[in-house]
Image: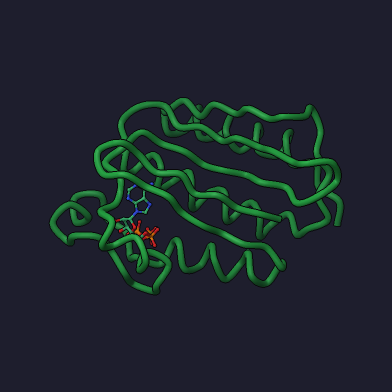
Length: 144
Ligand code: ATP
């Protein structure tokens, strides 16, 4: 199905800003970007990523949307939070994997969010990757 990604992300960002009291900034290289994808699945992915960004940071979070010509669409969710240690980074997409139970216990969660996000994206023929630096922040990039 056809989905206009920029407006769609803005809508989700607005809901987060209203209900979680955390500002979600949206920035895009173009005003409109059409994707042929499944709305529910993409929505679920973005919600998982925003939930994490908010859980593991204190400031604003951001969604950046990018596309070269009519090629792949990139959506990245970025925060300036606690980040992820280098040694844990390869495992965060594994089911039930959580970084350091002591820091994660306070925030709650099952360690399933990112593995679900990855499965959803694979079912759409998309990709997900993560870069992070401890005490600096995290960026999760989705490619459609
Ligand atoms: P949930 O299933 O509720 O999402 P979760 O956040 O523990 O729980 P995942 O979303 O799979 O599970 O994330 C796995 C682990 O990766 C988390 O426990 C957390 O330690 C780390 N992580 C994920 N996103 C971030 C982020 N934006 N900043 C810092 N750490 C993160």
